[in-house]
Image (tube, rainbow, N blue to C red; front, side, top):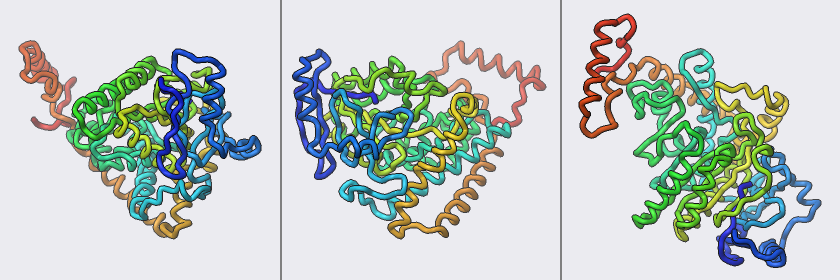
Length: 448
């Protein structure tokens, strides 16, 4: 985990009953004696620390956290030397070990989260196959990482989001429509990006979701800066920044955490540690199990939507009320290929992938939770999948028939008033189209 500390001495403060404690700082980045560090470790250790036998029984099997164990105590921890526990609310069977950790959301909200997770999964299946058929140019799935939808539920609609490329579920939960998704992937005239971005590079001004960028980790320092702007403006909101373990290996990540900690920015850094940076396993990316930057941090079971929800909710309170950055590391497993340009069988076995797909599926886990409360049944499941597949295919077919953005859009949205050289380039392009129509087909482009 990318562990964090604070500059101050040890301080223990309860978040809410039975949710554990966060520990802002057992040592500073300037050092401190080993005696001080051991004393801080002893003070920061909960009284009900599990035995070695209990740790072994609840061992984590995520590739990025093999020395960790599951716990039902939500502790924001300091920069200590022992293996970092992974906060979990419900196990693989959807059972909640400690009822006090159950967020107890309404049936309507819990079912909404589940429906969006299923819809996301179905959309991934359809769009992945569409790319393989040559109908869209590129796609990236979120197989195995659908529980990030839980983080979206814990945020305020006015909180600002900087995503990477596996946050479609967050956008879906905020109200991004199926038509919006399909228009962006097809780059048609309804695409808010006007065809200038690769597929899955979504964005929405109305939903406070910044457009995704291809370069790795660029959104992380941008998120820190946006959070600082919110703080300066006195707005009661925070910034949520999503990224993967590969992005956390970039220099931008380290600069952003230092910036956010120094200026006390209300930002949540949400790292999806799915075990691989494309094809590089996490153990080849990091030597240790912690880095100190003065940031509250927690590791959670990323396949447990309630652990993700609880951690994000409490992280938001820390960020907005205390104006401090928070790091959430969601341990999960990327079941799908990195993208449609990747063949993950070259660096991991198919058996490993199948085991994760069937033995620890975040959608199945939530479904079992709902069924145990009589909030869901087989008929509802069948109806949901039939109806959402129908809606997805209808949106897909409609997007495929739409024309591409108008040619004039190539020259807009950069300058308030088009400069002379850009006007000349536009005239030159129109002359070339007129002179060589066979090389410049424009029939599938929308009018101005």
